[in-house]
Length: 606
Image (spheres, rainbow, N blue to C red):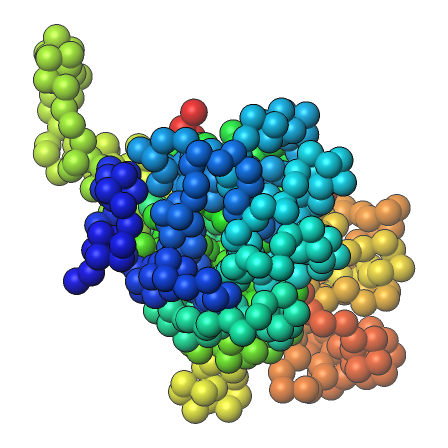
């Protein structure tokens, strides 16, 4: 097996790599380092995220840098400040024992005056974002006429972010006689155009197949209704007690909203997006790397270049607009030879977006059901037992308290004692997920059941356990699903009742409840003399509509008088699945009979 010394690197670089724990080069390093060391030819390199691209282009440059010359000899362009900072940090680590080599990261959000002062002292390697680099060039603070190496890292993302004009301006002030190195995790047509326009007869090397996902990452998808997307996200987190994950969102607003919800529900989470100051971003990343934060909610741009090797999951709260971005997202896990899982949460309408991604990464997504409450409780219980088993006992400090403890616990048998200690933490999850509803999209699951069992009827799994109710208010009364749920909650029917489908029509509506509470539901509305927007509310049991048949409320044949289900044929709206957690309540102080949108408070680390 080859070593870094075999590649022709000097002893000072080898010493730094050894101190960092790097023993053997990766595939992309094996191919790129000798090429850059032994040739001045341009290089186009494909390397999956997490395979050591930074070392692949920076180590051969460090080997050849003239440390006695303070002019800029190499410029590395990166799409985001996080990636620029990370690359600069890596180069500083690699050159720790190489005297006289100075590297500077230049990016927006940080004082440009400080960056100009450092440039005046002499810097051989610049790592910059395109926007700040152009700004420094315009101010005549950065001169690139002495550049020998130009590196375009994550070239596809720079194009996606609209930096083509900036790239043109930067390349215009670099000398023609230079070596251009283009590194990218994916090679869409736009990147091929960069190579054609900016490079001369480049050598091409690849690590793995072009545009293919890492073999260390498995890909799963969950199909849910839109309203259950966040509830499904929480269940994925809860069923994985040791989760260490990035959740990707498409917008800054969505990112902050999801992070705020997770924090309010007691998760160790935070957000990372462009609206944060550089100081805030650095603080968040410091906590995430130290695992004080277990879940980081981020935009694609903010998460590029994050050097975190131990992520267990990448979760796509929503799929990216650009399918190539999925490769970068999933590449954040499964790094450094470790196994990772990339999850996509989609609605039935979004399932079609998975097919082009599958073609791109060369892998199939595995359809996975949203974890049940039982699965979550089992995993959490086993995690708790592991914690108890592995806890380090402080014999000295606890000794003086043991007599009193033994006295308090006297009379309790071993089995009873174990049950009580386990229940202290476990009961919160057990209570929360008791009678937890199925969050899987019913239409998707019917399709799965039909394919798997040959049942062409595709009956909903909970259909027989639900009763259908008519209520004499609808859209014209300003009723919506959330307000209907609030109205039902106000009747205090039962703490354990489960809700099914809701259908809001113009002048009346339908909802489903656990059939064991039929009489209690009707009685509660009558007893409480329920009203809505000044109108008396009437609730009746109605026969469910099956296989396209219409029934009236009394169970006879449907009529066209508008009082039964027959009207649905011309006033139809897709029924909502409000059986999940995370729904709004009309009274935020009342406890929902159908599940709260807040987890029992989980212990958070400072």
